[in-house]
Image (cartoon, rainbow, N blue to C red; front, side, top):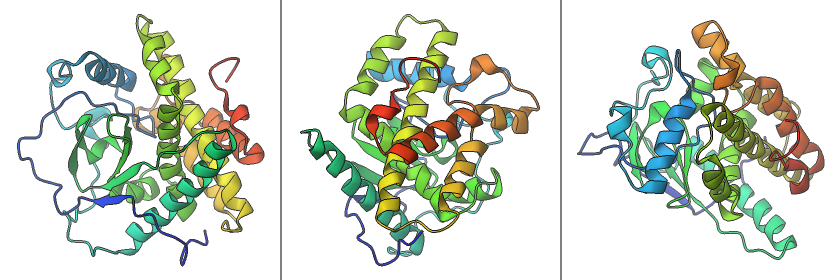
Amino acid sequence: MLWRGRRQSDNIEDERSDSGGGGGLGGGGQFRVPIGGRTGGGGSILLVILVVLAGWYFGFDPSQILGGGDGGLLPGGGDQITETQDNGNAPANDEMKQFVATVLADTEDTWTGIFKSQGLTYEDPKLVLFSGQVRSACGFASAAAGPFYCPGDHKVYLDMTFFQQLDQQFGASGEFARAYVVAHEIGHHVQNLTGIMGKFNQMRQGMSEADANQLSVRIELQADCFAGVWAHFTQQKGILEQGDIESALNAAKQIGDDTLQKKMQGYVVPESFNHGTSQQRQTWLARGFKSGKLSDCNTMSGPI
């Protein structure tokens, strides 16, 4: 990915120097939409998502249901990021921060243009870099839960050690795999701005867990498709290099619910899928990339 020398977004909030401390942070109303099917043995991550969603929507503290803890969602806490945490000592303009700021800037340019073409105004989100743990408008978050988007403050939260985990644990290497992570979370921001996320909240009320799982899958696959739409326009700018799209597609494969469950617990539980299978995630990412049209990202009706 030819990102060096391009515009970097000013909408980066670097809180790494403020992260990592316990300091009275508690659970509370967090809307977490992780990118990668972090499934727990014998249960569904969607239960956590639904409890947190309900807390955010109805105003109660989900930690009282979830029992607190560090937010780990893999069997036995296995999703803890094991790389040494920097705790804010990285240079203010380290290369990875510059990379993220450049990707964010490109998403801003792309989505501003798309919204303008439809007579809408795109609101740039903020992207918060943190180390270890962070407090958002949606509550407390641990790096172990992965990147997430908070609709309450229109911010994406990212501990960049997740990129190391993506490479070393999930086998998804490459700069464009990392760019896909950012673009997927921006896809949730687009859903929030367009009202899709609000409708999701309304629709899931009163659903069975199985039906709510299926709805969650559709939301996540649409975010993948939106990431593909961004990649489509990025390619038109001549930024992509050979192998970049393959890198992103491999990332989508490696974080599919079926692939993660098989790797981490040795078997799959299809009714617990909440992000989509590897094939589904690849298909919708590729679909958005091929057409560059939002109309081709309608995951809310028909087969997925």
